[in-house]
Image 1 (cartoon, one colour):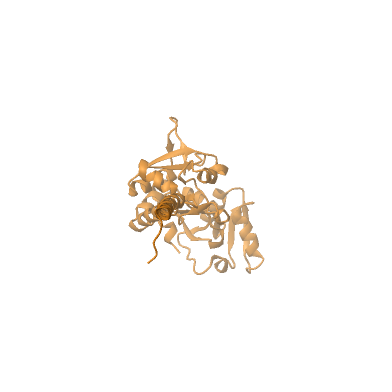
Image 2 (cartoon, one colour; image 1 turned 90 degrees about the vertical axis):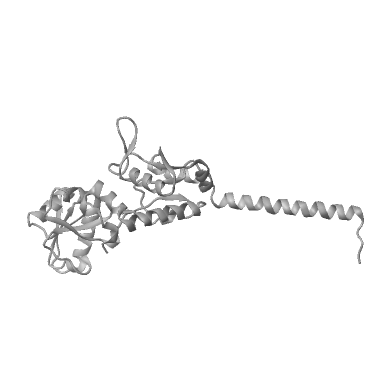
Length: 278
Protein backbone atom coordinates (compact mmCIF):
# COMPACT_ATOMS: atom_id res chain seq x y z
CA UNK A 1 0.00 0.00 0.00
CA UNK A 2 1.34 3.38 -1.10
CA UNK A 3 0.94 6.18 1.43
CA UNK A 4 0.70 9.76 0.12
CA UNK A 5 1.83 12.76 2.04
CA UNK A 6 -0.86 15.22 3.17
CA UNK A 7 0.44 17.82 0.71
CA UNK A 8 0.28 15.34 -2.18
CA UNK A 9 -3.29 14.40 -1.26
CA UNK A 10 -4.25 18.06 -1.08
CA UNK A 11 -2.86 18.76 -4.55
CA UNK A 12 -4.62 15.71 -5.99
CA UNK A 13 -7.92 16.90 -4.55
CA UNK A 14 -7.35 20.39 -5.96
CA UNK A 15 -6.46 18.94 -9.37
CA UNK A 16 -9.54 16.69 -9.38
CA UNK A 17 -11.78 19.62 -8.47
CA UNK A 18 -10.19 21.74 -11.19
CA UNK A 19 -10.71 19.03 -13.82
CA UNK A 20 -14.31 18.59 -12.72
CA UNK A 21 -14.91 22.34 -12.94
CA UNK A 22 -13.37 22.46 -16.42
CA UNK A 23 -15.51 19.53 -17.55
CA UNK A 24 -18.72 21.15 -16.27
CA UNK A 25 -17.76 24.47 -17.82
CA UNK A 26 -17.00 22.80 -21.14
CA UNK A 27 -20.46 21.24 -21.16
CA UNK A 28 -22.06 24.66 -20.79
CA UNK A 29 -19.79 26.10 -23.48
CA UNK A 30 -20.57 23.29 -25.92
CA UNK A 31 -24.27 23.56 -25.23
CA UNK A 32 -24.20 27.32 -25.74
CA UNK A 33 -22.12 27.09 -28.91
CA UNK A 34 -24.42 24.39 -30.29
CA UNK A 35 -27.45 26.66 -30.30
CA UNK A 36 -27.29 29.99 -28.50
CA UNK A 37 -30.25 31.28 -30.50
CA UNK A 38 -32.53 28.45 -29.39
CA UNK A 39 -31.54 28.95 -25.74
CA UNK A 40 -32.30 32.67 -26.05
CA UNK A 41 -35.63 32.01 -27.77
CA UNK A 42 -36.76 29.56 -25.11
CA UNK A 43 -35.83 31.99 -22.36
CA UNK A 44 -37.69 34.95 -23.95
CA UNK A 45 -40.56 33.06 -25.55
CA UNK A 46 -39.95 35.16 -28.67
CA UNK A 47 -38.37 34.37 -32.04
CA UNK A 48 -37.08 37.32 -34.07
CA UNK A 49 -37.21 37.11 -37.86
CA UNK A 50 -35.14 39.32 -40.14
CA UNK A 51 -37.04 40.32 -43.29
CA UNK A 52 -36.72 42.82 -46.13
CA UNK A 53 -40.21 44.38 -46.23
CA UNK A 54 -39.96 45.61 -49.81
CA UNK A 55 -41.33 42.57 -51.64
CA UNK A 56 -45.12 42.35 -51.53
CA UNK A 57 -47.10 40.18 -51.27
CA UNK A 58 -44.48 38.26 -49.26
CA UNK A 59 -43.44 41.02 -46.87
CA UNK A 60 -44.27 44.70 -46.68
CA UNK A 61 -45.09 47.52 -44.26
CA UNK A 62 -48.52 49.11 -43.94
CA UNK A 63 -49.23 52.80 -43.32
CA UNK A 64 -48.64 52.29 -39.59
CA UNK A 65 -45.27 50.63 -40.12
CA UNK A 66 -46.60 47.16 -39.25
CA UNK A 67 -45.32 44.09 -41.10
CA UNK A 68 -47.73 42.11 -43.26
CA UNK A 69 -47.64 39.58 -46.09
CA UNK A 70 -47.48 35.87 -46.80
CA UNK A 71 -44.12 35.38 -45.09
CA UNK A 72 -45.27 37.37 -42.07
CA UNK A 73 -48.38 35.21 -41.68
CA UNK A 74 -46.27 32.09 -42.09
CA UNK A 75 -43.70 33.21 -39.51
CA UNK A 76 -46.43 33.90 -36.97
CA UNK A 77 -48.09 30.53 -37.63
CA UNK A 78 -44.79 28.68 -37.29
CA UNK A 79 -43.94 30.55 -34.09
CA UNK A 80 -47.35 29.72 -32.61
CA UNK A 81 -46.78 26.02 -33.26
CA UNK A 82 -43.51 26.33 -31.38
CA UNK A 83 -45.25 28.04 -28.46
CA UNK A 84 -43.57 31.34 -29.28
CA UNK A 85 -44.36 34.89 -30.35
CA UNK A 86 -42.91 36.18 -33.64
CA UNK A 87 -41.21 39.55 -33.89
CA UNK A 88 -39.67 41.12 -36.99
CA UNK A 89 -36.75 43.36 -37.89
CA UNK A 90 -36.47 45.17 -41.21
CA UNK A 91 -33.14 44.29 -42.86
CA UNK A 92 -31.95 44.81 -46.44
CA UNK A 93 -31.92 41.58 -48.46
CA UNK A 94 -28.12 41.58 -48.81
CA UNK A 95 -27.71 41.80 -45.04
CA UNK A 96 -30.11 39.04 -43.99
CA UNK A 97 -27.56 36.26 -43.46
CA UNK A 98 -25.26 38.71 -41.71
CA UNK A 99 -27.83 39.22 -38.94
CA UNK A 100 -27.67 35.47 -38.24
CA UNK A 101 -23.88 35.41 -38.23
CA UNK A 102 -23.65 38.13 -35.56
CA UNK A 103 -26.60 36.72 -33.60
CA UNK A 104 -28.79 39.82 -33.91
CA UNK A 105 -31.78 37.90 -35.27
CA UNK A 106 -32.82 34.29 -34.83
CA UNK A 107 -34.05 33.45 -38.33
CA UNK A 108 -34.59 34.88 -41.80
CA UNK A 109 -37.92 34.77 -43.63
CA UNK A 110 -37.94 37.06 -46.65
CA UNK A 111 -38.78 35.27 -49.91
CA UNK A 112 -35.27 33.96 -49.37
CA UNK A 113 -34.09 31.70 -52.19
CA UNK A 114 -32.12 28.67 -51.07
CA UNK A 115 -28.38 29.41 -51.27
CA UNK A 116 -26.40 26.19 -50.75
CA UNK A 117 -23.16 28.15 -51.17
CA UNK A 118 -23.91 29.87 -47.84
CA UNK A 119 -23.99 26.52 -46.03
CA UNK A 120 -20.97 27.39 -43.89
CA UNK A 121 -22.90 30.30 -42.39
CA UNK A 122 -26.53 29.22 -42.46
CA UNK A 123 -28.85 26.24 -42.29
CA UNK A 124 -32.08 26.06 -44.29
CA UNK A 125 -35.51 24.55 -43.79
CA UNK A 126 -37.26 22.60 -46.54
CA UNK A 127 -38.84 24.94 -49.14
CA UNK A 128 -42.27 26.34 -48.30
CA UNK A 129 -42.80 28.12 -51.64
CA UNK A 130 -41.37 27.75 -55.16
CA UNK A 131 -41.38 30.97 -57.16
CA UNK A 132 -39.62 29.39 -60.12
CA UNK A 133 -40.77 28.96 -63.71
CA UNK A 134 -44.09 27.22 -64.40
CA UNK A 135 -45.91 26.17 -67.55
CA UNK A 136 -49.30 27.82 -68.00
CA UNK A 137 -51.72 26.18 -70.45
CA UNK A 138 -55.43 26.10 -71.18
CA UNK A 139 -57.50 23.98 -68.81
CA UNK A 140 -58.15 21.44 -71.58
CA UNK A 141 -54.45 20.86 -72.31
CA UNK A 142 -52.96 17.60 -71.07
CA UNK A 143 -49.23 17.71 -70.34
CA UNK A 144 -47.59 14.33 -69.86
CA UNK A 145 -43.97 13.59 -69.18
CA UNK A 146 -41.30 16.28 -69.24
CA UNK A 147 -42.35 19.68 -70.50
CA UNK A 148 -39.45 19.81 -72.94
CA UNK A 149 -40.65 16.62 -74.64
CA UNK A 150 -44.26 17.78 -74.62
CA UNK A 151 -43.20 21.01 -76.37
CA UNK A 152 -42.49 19.29 -79.69
CA UNK A 153 -44.53 20.99 -82.39
CA UNK A 154 -45.87 23.56 -79.91
CA UNK A 155 -45.69 27.33 -79.66
CA UNK A 156 -44.42 28.55 -76.28
CA UNK A 157 -44.64 32.16 -75.13
CA UNK A 158 -42.56 34.01 -72.54
CA UNK A 159 -41.61 37.54 -71.58
CA UNK A 160 -38.66 38.58 -73.71
CA UNK A 161 -35.41 38.32 -71.77
CA UNK A 162 -36.92 36.32 -68.91
CA UNK A 163 -35.73 32.96 -67.63
CA UNK A 164 -38.68 31.35 -69.41
CA UNK A 165 -37.64 32.98 -72.67
CA UNK A 166 -34.09 31.69 -72.27
CA UNK A 167 -35.39 28.17 -71.63
CA UNK A 168 -37.63 28.21 -74.70
CA UNK A 169 -34.79 29.41 -76.91
CA UNK A 170 -32.54 26.70 -75.50
CA UNK A 171 -35.18 24.03 -76.06
CA UNK A 172 -35.85 25.23 -79.61
CA UNK A 173 -32.38 24.06 -80.61
CA UNK A 174 -33.16 20.54 -79.43
CA UNK A 175 -36.93 20.07 -79.78
CA UNK A 176 -38.35 19.65 -83.31
CA UNK A 177 -40.84 22.28 -84.49
CA UNK A 178 -40.86 24.23 -81.23
CA UNK A 179 -41.76 27.84 -81.97
CA UNK A 180 -40.77 30.58 -79.50
CA UNK A 181 -43.12 33.53 -79.06
CA UNK A 182 -41.54 36.54 -77.38
CA UNK A 183 -43.98 38.75 -75.45
CA UNK A 184 -43.50 42.20 -73.90
CA UNK A 185 -44.37 40.89 -70.42
CA UNK A 186 -45.51 37.74 -68.62
CA UNK A 187 -49.18 38.74 -68.67
CA UNK A 188 -49.06 39.10 -72.45
CA UNK A 189 -47.46 35.66 -72.73
CA UNK A 190 -50.30 34.08 -70.74
CA UNK A 191 -52.87 36.09 -72.68
CA UNK A 192 -51.44 34.59 -75.88
CA UNK A 193 -52.22 31.15 -74.47
CA UNK A 194 -55.77 32.14 -73.57
CA UNK A 195 -56.28 33.62 -77.07
CA UNK A 196 -54.97 30.49 -78.78
CA UNK A 197 -51.82 32.12 -80.15
CA UNK A 198 -49.61 29.84 -78.04
CA UNK A 199 -49.93 26.37 -76.55
CA UNK A 200 -48.23 27.34 -73.30
CA UNK A 201 -46.34 30.08 -71.51
CA UNK A 202 -43.29 29.85 -69.27
CA UNK A 203 -43.56 32.47 -66.50
CA UNK A 204 -42.61 32.84 -62.85
CA UNK A 205 -45.02 31.25 -60.40
CA UNK A 206 -45.98 34.41 -58.50
CA UNK A 207 -47.01 36.22 -61.69
CA UNK A 208 -48.88 33.11 -62.85
CA UNK A 209 -50.87 32.86 -59.62
CA UNK A 210 -51.86 36.51 -59.82
CA UNK A 211 -52.95 36.21 -63.46
CA UNK A 212 -54.84 32.93 -63.06
CA UNK A 213 -56.97 34.35 -60.26
CA UNK A 214 -58.97 36.25 -62.91
CA UNK A 215 -58.37 34.01 -65.95
CA UNK A 216 -60.08 30.72 -65.18
CA UNK A 217 -59.62 29.17 -68.67
CA UNK A 218 -55.94 28.76 -67.79
CA UNK A 219 -54.08 26.53 -65.35
CA UNK A 220 -50.57 25.74 -64.16
CA UNK A 221 -49.82 22.49 -65.95
CA UNK A 222 -46.31 21.86 -64.61
CA UNK A 223 -43.37 23.31 -62.76
CA UNK A 224 -40.01 23.40 -64.53
CA UNK A 225 -37.73 21.37 -62.27
CA UNK A 226 -34.48 22.95 -63.47
CA UNK A 227 -35.79 26.49 -63.05
CA UNK A 228 -36.99 26.47 -59.46
CA UNK A 229 -36.66 29.28 -56.93
CA UNK A 230 -37.34 27.57 -53.59
CA UNK A 231 -38.01 29.93 -50.69
CA UNK A 232 -36.73 28.75 -47.30
CA UNK A 233 -36.34 29.94 -43.73
CA UNK A 234 -32.68 30.41 -42.80
CA UNK A 235 -30.98 30.16 -39.41
CA UNK A 236 -27.39 30.31 -38.23
CA UNK A 237 -25.39 27.18 -38.94
CA UNK A 238 -24.85 27.12 -35.16
CA UNK A 239 -28.59 26.66 -34.53
CA UNK A 240 -29.40 22.98 -35.23
CA UNK A 241 -32.11 22.82 -32.56
CA UNK A 242 -33.88 25.89 -33.93
CA UNK A 243 -33.64 24.51 -37.47
CA UNK A 244 -35.13 21.21 -36.32
CA UNK A 245 -38.09 22.93 -34.65
CA UNK A 246 -38.78 25.21 -37.61
CA UNK A 247 -38.64 22.24 -39.98
CA UNK A 248 -41.03 20.27 -37.77
CA UNK A 249 -43.53 23.14 -37.72
CA UNK A 250 -43.36 23.62 -41.50
CA UNK A 251 -43.79 19.89 -42.13
CA UNK A 252 -46.82 19.82 -39.84
CA UNK A 253 -48.37 22.77 -41.65
CA UNK A 254 -47.79 21.14 -45.01
CA UNK A 255 -49.26 17.83 -43.81
CA UNK A 256 -52.42 19.27 -42.25
CA UNK A 257 -53.17 21.64 -45.13
CA UNK A 258 -52.71 24.89 -43.22
CA UNK A 259 -49.71 25.88 -45.34
CA UNK A 260 -51.70 25.21 -48.50
CA UNK A 261 -54.54 27.33 -47.13
CA UNK A 262 -52.10 30.15 -46.45
CA UNK A 263 -50.79 29.98 -50.02
CA UNK A 264 -54.35 30.09 -51.30
CA UNK A 265 -55.14 33.13 -49.13
CA UNK A 266 -52.35 35.14 -50.73
CA UNK A 267 -52.04 33.64 -54.22
CA UNK A 268 -55.29 31.89 -55.09
CA UNK A 269 -56.42 28.30 -55.45
CA UNK A 270 -53.71 27.47 -58.01
CA UNK A 271 -51.06 27.90 -55.32
CA UNK A 272 -52.60 25.61 -52.70
CA UNK A 273 -50.82 22.37 -53.63
CA UNK A 274 -47.81 23.83 -55.38
CA UNK A 275 -45.19 21.86 -53.38
CA UNK A 276 -47.02 18.55 -53.79
CA UNK A 277 -47.90 18.52 -57.47
CA UNK A 278 -44.96 16.56 -58.77
